[in-house]
Amino acid sequence: MFQQRRRNVQGLFVCAVLLAALLGAGGCRDEGGSAPATGTETTVRETTAQETIPQPVVEDLAVAPESERVDLASPTFSDPTSVDNPLFPVSSQASVLLLGQVDGEAFRTEVTLLPETRIIEWQGQQVETLVSQYVAYLDGRIHEVAYDFYAQDDTGAVWYFGEDVFNFKDGLIADTHGTWIAGKDGPAAMIMPADPQVGDVYRPENIPGFVFEEVTVKSVGETLEGPLGPVEGGLAIEELHMDGSTEGKTFGPGYGEFFTGGGGDVEALALAVPTDAISEPTPAELVTLESGAADVFDAAQSKDWSAAQTTVETMTAAWETVRAGEVPDRLEPQMTRALDALADGVGSRKASVARQAAIDVARWSLDLQLRHRPVTEVDLARFDLWAAQMLVDAAARDAAAVNGDFFNLDYIRDRIQPSLDEADRSRLNLELEELNGAVADEDLAAVAEAAQQLRETLAGFTLAS
Image 1: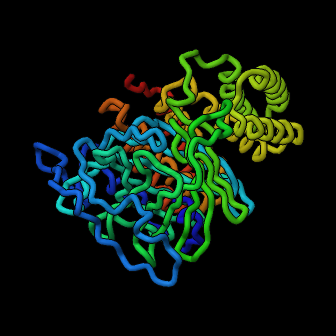
Image 2: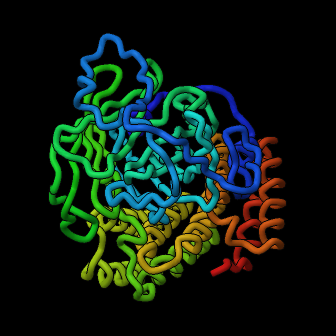
């Protein structure tokens, strides 16, 4: 949860290939990573109304009385991966983008539902859970990755079955603090009631001394400021943490977590698909922004500043057309600032600045294109941008940034790999393995060569529809 996603981290490098092994290429797995037996994937345990979940002792914290709790009855799970609770609709959320700030720095999160599931054993049940990938960036660099496990019970309440967490510092995995799995480390925890009411209390994380949150519902039926206009039926809660601090959150129908704020930090929803998706084709102007950014990236490398300047002018005109229409509120200022930085970089003829700004413009353009294009297409283009970022960072002799770039490639691979045919998948994994070797050796010349080869390979990929 958000409070747990702000840790100061330190430690040593762990090879990225270990991360891929945690989830594998697909299919259901139990908490040990092995494939489940064939047959029924979720065993429904017979339960009575009197059965309750044993509660851990909470010391030195003013928690709510059990009479206010709505998460004490033991749930059953007949169809756990159909998570359609409107305030936490995980199974229908292909991609969610949140923006904000943490400790005064820009904070960005990409949340993606992965195609595989995971089997977790809890209270005698083999529960099949959805796997949601959370990737957080602080000041443009990888900060935290978590694989979250969710299931919906037979009443419509959503339960949190744990998370695999990787915290980063200077491009390396520093620790896995915050990792917990239901049944091993503590109980599964309700993250959204079926029909929340004012005064309801529940715990999205319930392992005191390690991960703990207690929620009190403050209001329902709120009108929220959505990406493209008002969103009715919002939920407002207050979340109590183990240190006694609280923060407010809102949730929106069709969106899930909408806004989190506490201590000056903010994480706010910017766009979600398919909720904000439309059937119209990608506007030509957004294509111009993406292709123009690629042209400026190349022109800055060859120092063809005249061509770069002309392209920036074309891109600026395209953006003025786009912003005159319907643009998500939190994305409009991001693109405007990125284009200004690109114009400054080209105007000052600073190749490194211009190339970085071109990547940033392309990234915001892809975010805007999420409304129009399949998510896997956008993620493939994001993958290419991280390979381009690796070229910039290798040229700057920034080994730590290059390490982080590789991890980004590895995590986005989780999203795009199922949509590749077998030949492309094998080629992608082979080239990433070669790139990983160059990164581990800190051979930045070899890194740049392998990253460029990877970009050329990606250009020939075709994703399954």
